Length: 221
Picture 1: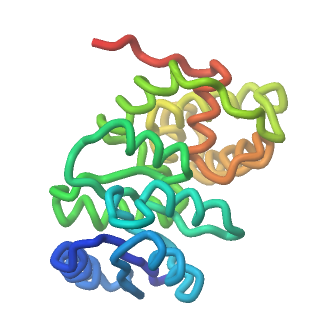
Picture 2 (picture 1 turned 30 degrees about the vertical axis):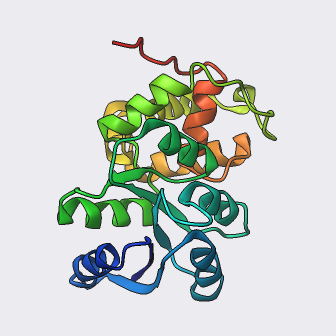
């Protein structure tokens, strides 16, 4: 199955570089390029990409605002935020807006390709240290948002275990090993967690796990 990718960045050279890297892989197809958030939204509606690589800083509608609008739609694409600098506030805002993770623009080609595949496969790009730091720093101090349709009380004990491991950045394979179950069983648990909590993806489930106290932020160093 080919993964359709849309690249949104205000620098043509960056877009061209990412296109070359991604289209060198047989399972990845760059279906379009956008120079700002508004264009990304228009192209996403027409091209229906699976994953959008979204620059966090663009003229007009920026990556955070564009991500919020995209993920609020029915059957939204997955969004990976791209940034030149490790700026915590806008990246945290992007996770809150519905992004599935972020990458620095100086990531190695193999890391970019793997990120697209991971997110397209339904996993969250939560493993990088910078992403974990964002969650640890901000989620402990942000006011809890309006309660979703579900709550932790609806989860089984095993589902809580799975959610806690997700919140610590574990992949399906790592969770399966830790709990001595199959990856298929983990996927079933994750699907049930998303449904019961009323959230759209794994990242939002992780955010909620912090908000509701299932996982505590690490102390600042």
